[in-house]
Amino acid sequence: MKNKDDGMRGITRIIQNITSKIADQAFISDHRAQPEHFTRIRTLSFQIIFMLILRKTLKSLQLSLNELFMGGHIANTVSASAYTQARKKFKHTAFIELNDDIIDGFYSNNEAIKTWNQYRCLAVDGSKIILPNTKEIKEEYGSIAIKNQSVNSSFSQAMFECCYDVLNHIAIKSTLAHGLSYEASLATEMLDGTSENDLLLYDRGYASYEFLATLTSQAKNYIIRCPNSSFKIVKSLTLDAKNWSKTVTLNAPSCQLKNIKQKGLPLTIKVRFVSVILSTGEIEILATSLMNQTIERDEFKVLYGMRWGVETFFSRIKDRLCLENFTGKTAESVRQDFWSTIFISNFETVAIENIDDQMNANTINKKHYKKVNKAVSFNVIKNMAFDVFMNNSNLSESVEKMLLLFKKNPILQRPERESPMRKKRSDLRSYNFLKRIKKMVF
Image 1 (spheres, rainbow, N blue to C red):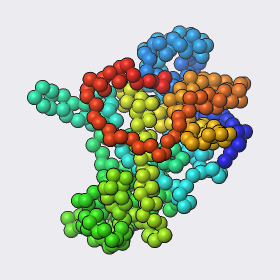
Image 2: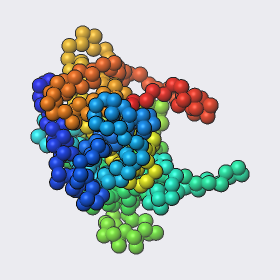
Image 3: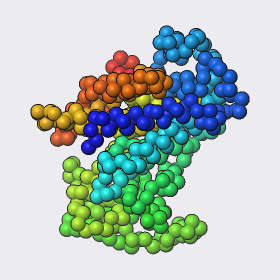
């Protein structure tokens, strides 16, 4: 565990890297739409546009710009139209590069990285993202038709695929693809960013011979939940009360032979199938590359259960960070909002590293473990963004204040508590929650 000073130095180095980059002319040149953009001194500079996209508020755009002036962050008042024009000069790739810096910095020379048996546990999954329904966005991300007796329309959506480190809470790879993209194809593209020291966790939508053969051919370690209709062994293992683990040789389905051969994938693969018993008594079958017989049945259940971390990540950025509340109606503004959200999520993870341990270090009653309240931490980062990223003279003071605020109103973790079966809310109750109860971060 890092001590307080080590944590402060670590996050300070990351902030200094971000601050220097967004002010560096070479970086600005790499991430502007045209060579002539951001070459003159303007109120809405590259750094200011970066900060506004990063802070992304649910308030009206003009109110946000007015608050910027009232807070002394810009010298002159600006209109919403001026900001709309200025952000067209800014490329979302700035957030991608800075996000990559955070990820690389987090994993390099960090002795506090959490693993299972020296494996980094990565959950891979996809989630649908509702987009503004404009012609430009439809052309890039596609549209879904809605047709019934009373409606004949369509809406735009994208597929958000993510490879998420569930133990360290880092989105190591993300992509925003066409709404009709096949999740397994996107997951295959993400394999380049993984190594032999990674354990990949997948839900039932990835359980196919082709995907298993792809993982096997690249020597990837995996656990995949299998539906009953996926492989013959699944049903027989579900009914087998004596054996919970079987290793079998799978042959490529005859209907897929041509495709498998064209892709250079093996025609036979060896896969281990294990059954686990859920708390409800239901039996689930997992396909895995882990042949170590010392791994117990309950451990496989825990390992697959870790996959839920990517689901909570999707929920966090959709609900807490309001990803789908896009601030523009162009494809580029969608990408800006998307990548700034991924960036702030990873930055928050690195910023609060070790805060949980600090909050629990001197706790007398350790019945419940304290965790940073995400609503608080995201709010602090967005409110203090200008102090942290554009005020180097008092950086150490700002960082100390930020870390102090992270500890306020923590969440108590109750691992023994089980959530009741979720019931579908009525439309009226959902509307009431969104309008009167839901608390926004910023």
